[in-house]
Length: 130
Ligand code: THU
Image (cartoon, rainbow, N blue to C red):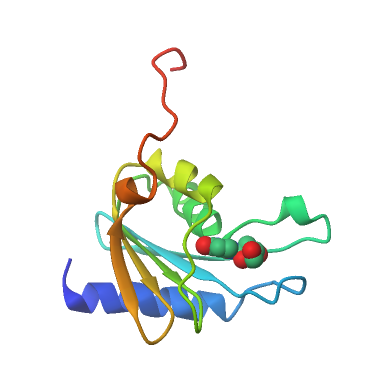
């Protein structure tokens, strides 16, 4: 992926974080997924007073992409201002169903690059459920 594409993805995640609905944690997160064809899908965290109903930014972006019929991705960017936010276990498991991808974590001043497969080695899979 080009530096330009990477910056576009991080910027989209940053913009999405500005729409975060996080009145309980005040922890605003934005995510952006880049499809194989370069199309970008954004998501932000949407919290709820029933805390367990909260949806993370990463799953929000994933649901948006799948709703548009996109299921193959080159990269994911996650943005949280001031501190890197690592995707939670539920988001890692949901994302890895759609293949391995580059992951860029940005806090506005630093960017860490990883592979999704490094974030979730030994993810749950089974031949018994098709
Ligand atoms: N959160 C995300 O949306 N993504 C992450 O990578 C880490 C955590 C959200 C969930 C919750 O709304 C808030 O951040 C605090 O956990």
